[in-house]
Image 1 (cartoon, rainbow, N blue to C red):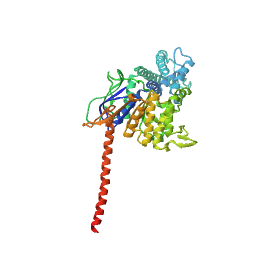
Image 2 (image 1 turned 90 degrees about the vertical axis):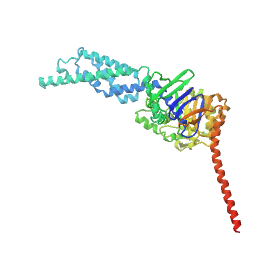
Image 3 (image 1 turned 45 degrees about the horizontal axis):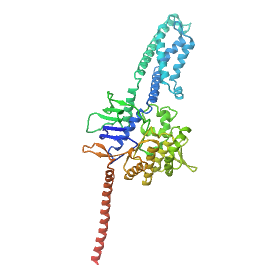
Image 4 (image 1 turned 135 degrees about the vertical axis):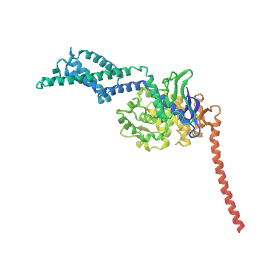
Length: 504
């Protein structure tokens, strides 16, 4: 698989292979994170897109029904007014009335699975029902309204006429709104427009609405994700928005799950998922994850880590053998387990319960991987994006983490994209990918800052030495500086001693 970026962020024009492990290294502010954020936005936007679409559609229809009380008013007046020729049975009207109330009741929404197809059919039935009702409504006698008999006839007729006007006003409004709603929900059966907007909003969220460069290089931007002749994505972006043109393509491909990990301190704020769920009135993190709401990569990861999801015994049995080596390696660093219930977030080891937020910073990256493994989130359908995961790790633990990554690729088929500043980490990744005979599944890139300030990615698979030369150049510079001052200090000491001898 290959991702191509043209005029995205500060990236001018580059292609990157995604095949097992892809490593990007380079200076600070050289666009290393751009490809990771782009890839995350594309894959996250289309993950579970059908489920998101259905839930989003259902919530939209319910919202329209909630906002148009005229629909309820019409059925309420019919139910109690009995002003129709061939008046339907009370049971029939009551059924319609109760069925409508069911959908606009918030408590009902929270307790049931959304079924957009069922609601869509019901709305269509309502439109047809109102068309038939309009033919049967008569107001021959204002007494249908059960106006008090003690009221003078003239006043009764006046009140009856007002109620008649009210009914038809409510009726026309209800019929128009329902008809428009039905037309809207039938407009895009292939979900194309919805998917495009999902990608558009996710890209804008990850790039803080600055997908395109803010200086220089004007015109369109292009993002494509391909696998040989197969095109998963082909997007044109103008004015920081995905353009709806004939070239635009998008499909999920093999990756159903994508995670971008760039902050180990996310474990310090796991309680935030409860606040998010309360905000959107969902009972569980899992619901919010597939709700259609555009979440940041950190919010999505936080919800995934705390969602009430466990592997089945069958899944555990199948994966135990594959996970054995990976868990053994992680357990060398982090041997305990995690209790992430709503009562508290703990790391548990030998009867000790430690708040997850109190774990050593270096342990937290291992912790995230371990929790994702336990929840069955890392497999061949997962794209795992790691932004400088070695930042808080001692070289010894960098080596261990590099081996874990190699095992994720080998044993589970996880596709990994990572950025790094560390020569030790690059060397460890290269070494362990070779140890497990995964050379063909590893790609190393180095960023290059061009004269115009933009960046391109250069593949270094056949010239890894240049990566290390770049790191060593800066090591040599500071070593020379140190030596200069170290010997300078010795010369100053010698000079002072010589001066003292001369005085004597």
